[in-house]
Length: 108
Image: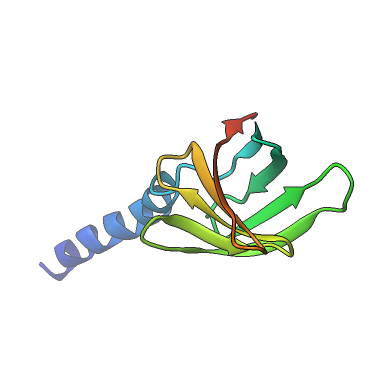
């Protein structure tokens, strides 16, 4: 009988990685956006904990992300951002406090 108690535990552990990736629609994606004079390309790692931002004139910038009520939040040298839960929109707040909403297109 004791062996049967481990079956649900093992099933739960094997499903955890799949659930974690499904809960973040940005996971493992490469994205591009151009909207209202702001633009960028970025890559999100498989577990939505890190973003690499590519700029045309500057070098790449890597930042950690954390889960929030709205999505996944991070900070870059020139702006803070939130990747929203729908997997398409992002919110960027510049150093001066101006906030822009934009649509990102997955390129991979």
